[in-house]
Image (tube, rainbow, N blue to C red; front, top):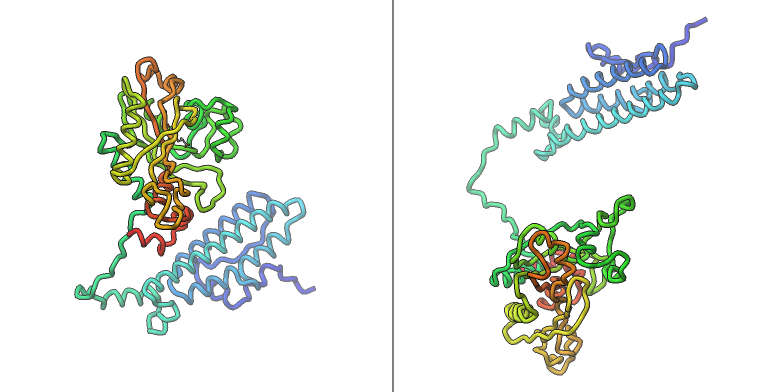
Length: 419
Ligand code: DAH
């Protein structure tokens, strides 16, 4: 009876493979003696090192094409041979293991072939010279072609340079910098803190008790899978810049005067006046004998510096867990000058009231000082005021922009107007 050629060996009749067999490194897929993990590993190792050796030797597009056909051609490529000789012949008990090894090998071969294609392409494309083009020009390899071009090319310093377009400060950042500089001129320094915050700093130490409804007003975005931690250690996206008040008081002894610019997040659906990401500027002054009069004087001065000396301020009672008493501050509308009208038209930014609500503020609640008492903030000895304002809102008003989303969509046609 005619001896049956084992399936896998058929491939060596393939012309392309024969060509490779002449080379000392030529690799062909061996039959497995057994299907144990050990012999599988050994066979896979051999294949891998052959693959590497052959890949390394590739210099030209044509070589890559031959390499690709030899390894991944559907009909009789080495991957196909591995499937036929190793996987198909594996006894049922070894199928799973061989299958795994086959998949890994297949992926490695495909990745290597593709990686090589990219590097051969890159070589030539860097010089806008496709590999087929290189051989048309009489170079046997793309590398050779590139080398030749470099040799004849010289830098022409008389050519005009490439103009780089100048960027511009984003309107929100610009506004924040202006606000910060008003306070710097009053002797305030700048502090920053993390955007991913713990429950402790965002809520607990700011006198938001656990389960207190005031937490609900903040529409907090929580980091997932924190349930196994104690509540105070759970991570969230800070909903305001106020936690940096605590972080700073832990770090610096009184007296302090600081402003805190930064990003904050809340679970608010985006619309013309809301964004899940926005910016705040926080302020905090702590010393002995700080009074509500200091708060009013400081903020009134800051608003005049920001919006013009004719603006007036007004305070009305409010509530924040970390200040007592708390207030909301209004400024006379700097669009209509407080009249509520622009010519015969109603003034939209202030909704015809002549006033714009600009920030929250108040005297630091003694309960807050209790959390940092050990660093010199004994509520019986020190007092302070704090405030927080939305920077995006100020920017909207300042520049007469009617949709906050425009600030965050990255449309250069919009942003260019602020350059
Ligand atoms: N953190 C408050 C908010 O985001 C704003 C605020 C109010 C900050 C009063 C303060 C303050 O420092 O005293 O709604």
